[in-house]
Image: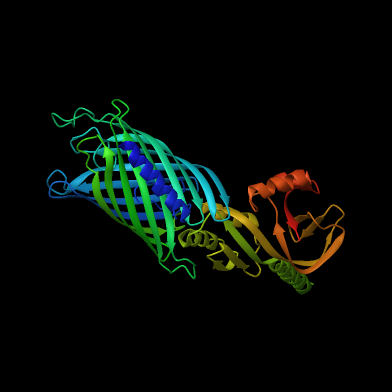
Length: 270
Length: 178
């Protein structure tokens, strides 16, 4: 069964390859950074289809110190344990160490790390450092831009903190996870540029997976998304994520939508 | 006597500024590694922080920026390269309109204009006068593969480093093709 899904995934990716994208991925980060000394502000809402529905809000600040190094600082608020409350925060840093450019194409590689805290109790062996767990992650990203198509792959290792103290009785303990993803994006509109004010329209298809190295339990999610860029500065994302295969029980983000607004301020930091 | 001194000083200053202004008046910059208009806008915003740039006209489909420069200000092409790289991209081609003033290219291809030193890869023992469009061939002003090819052909230390010793002083040497 899993092989069928992988076959479908590879097929979808090759179809999007033959069409032509962009790399402002909705569910992952590309190896490219923001321009040096820039500021980005994001507001993300995740709607999780579980029970009568849950909502998480993620305010986020992004800063780039130079062309190689940038950070994201996130806060997490949700109603997942009753009342809507602040449940934690996260710092993500990315260092771009390879950049090979050519006309309308590039290859980039970056290393990233994440440190998260959350006061939520844990219910599952899955580790989600964007709200559900305290922990650390490290990994690599490779991104290739080919004119209007952008492809990206991520591999990382995640470890949960507070493994026992926050575990709800009778649930699996979160410990460690191997994480991986493949993303593709395509610039659909405009076909030809006239000026900076034309809206850009991008479509994305991402495959997101995790495996628990201790027991081999894993999952694979498909995550299609649409994106509009306004005035070459403001970005609106709408994505949907669903599990196509897996045996990790009680995951929170296995069936969810995401709505995000991002505002970029280029070259504003001294 | 004092008046004459001031007059000479004023003329020297004025003349100096004038040759300054005329060194590089325009440049066509092709940027590699980007497609979308958000990336172009980021590059343009980065370039705009350079005080000597007057106008930037983008061609978003070809990722070309036509730059004009302020009169009386020294144009620093290395800073242009740095700003493109700060935005996350790199220069694929930079062609500059350089205004020569009966400038002598010696038998080694070297020429001096104001305080800039040039080495021509395809011209020697001749005099340049008036505006000439030249491609900058230095490292990170062309694609890495083109630079490698040129380096193998030219076998020159100054080309590899973009520097050389002129009159006993280490100087930035810009390599040009016309």
